[in-house]
Length: 293
Image (cartoon, rainbow, N blue to C red; front, side, top):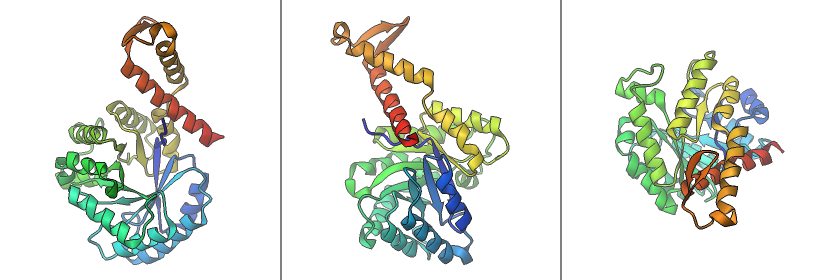
């Protein structure tokens, strides 16, 4: 089972050469080099050049590199996509996706600009329409031409457009987050949670990471390097979880249990579905071990 850990997905401002260089040493699983929200209009061209140079230059190890372009309807999008075509990041993150048609339009523009097929498409889920159309958006992943591989929750934009308040526990957001998780899982797409804005509140960050993890998120987007460790810990399998996964797999693979659909292990009833979960846990652990090595 091949998986790519996305426990921590850190936004880095594309206009800061220092930040782009620092990112090479940070323990984040993925980096979003941002040309949109983090960059003022008068800095767009310079930021694009910096990001293209950084991606082309490499030095980011096994970190997944994503370029967040400006919205498809903006004056900067075409140049952003052309830059992505030249440097071939792992993915392009497209903001303000609201319909399945937006996914296919973005994919078409990537293709027409010559962006390599290996560059995947990530979609920001940050509008009311995106939530209402979550199933249709995720469903486009069935078409290889869509390139869609990851949904990214944009909680701040979603709060602004719905007038929902971002409170501790995110009560107003939970139904929308869960809807997107269900859509992602239904169509084989990964999903990462939105950012936590209170940089100094580590306890609050940990609680929100655990909430997203328990909801089914694959990881979380972050806005500060100081948030990486907590995020990696919350979304990465712990030693106890890894040990249990090995025991579950071993139990079902033992000759006396191979024909069984369910059995008792250490006082717990487990089914074949638990073996599937265990295999993914070990695949993530192995991927993380390879990265660390």
